Length: 228
Image (tube, rainbow, N blue to C red):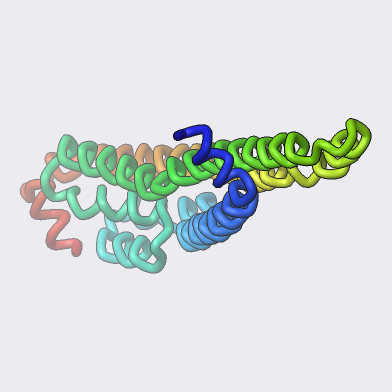
């Protein structure tokens, strides 16, 4: 029964595989485009941002520092803002907020990496299965064309190359998906390192501001709120 079913599906397996690969290619291109758009939105020149933020932190100008962080949706700005918003609750709260913000940014940036990885695997599987169906169809056609050995051999040679089309299509979908995932993963690591740098910068400046506030008659938490 299964053998008969395979004989019936063999002529259509390759075409179905190519159709599925075309759909997967559209999904892959859309996913890659969405990731690139997100990375462009989260991009910010970290050196310029640090040069603008550092004088404000040293002057304990918390309001302008928060306003600077709220100007864009860049990852480094979101991380710095998360730390500044918790500065009135003490350094442990600031450190926890910075670590949480960095983890949140990493998760958002790596959101669809698993999708790209699985798209590549699925495309390869569909491509190879489609080629196997085409090869099966060639074998069935050759067994049916029992006129002469030369006719069957000519049919095999003329059809063997189109039978590889699904496998090649699977590679053409899988390779860009995996390549995009690798390149985007490198950018994620770079952005995370920049976020960690900004987090250390914010934490160090708040740590320097805490002893100054402790030496005054106003606690650090109130100093921060009055400055805001």
